[in-house]
Length: 187
Picture 1 (cartoon, rainbow, N blue to C red):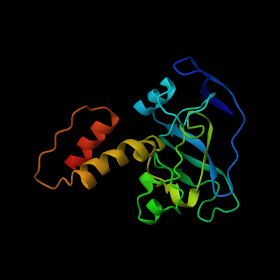
Picture 2 (picture 1 turned 60 degrees about the horizontal axis):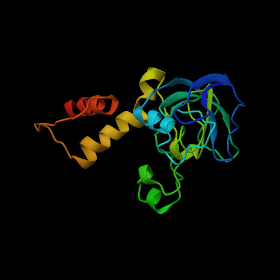
Picture 3 (picture 1 turned 90 degrees about the horizontal axis):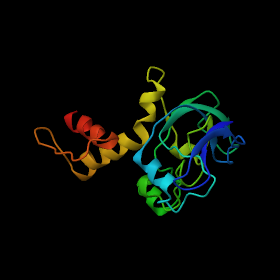
């Protein structure tokens, strides 16, 4: 497959051919149809994330079509339109049992703990826990923005900030997450 790869932190990234990923028993391989670029990708490229090993394919904001399915996956089939949260949960640890997948004790993150979505294909673990169906009428570009920036902003505005109708919300820094927070607060 073709992918964006960097071999040294802060060094050049190149588009080149690399081996296609294979699904884990509990995972899938997704054909990437859209992927976002996040400040976290820059941090990874700079070497600020200890989970990244070189050479590396970045990218964690993605949407696409299921291409291959591991034998222990029960919900998803090739051809399904999907996206995924930034933090992929194991589904079995204490945090997951409480419904706190975003702080899973055995989390994986495409583009950080393993190769990501700046490629034709990306492997995603624990598919039955992590994949989210993308409606037919939603663009892949829109769906790719939901798993990181919108999920992060929603948690900040609604779950942590507990903003309610009629309240003012101040957002400092309007990148992808900040603009998503503005939209969620306005809604």
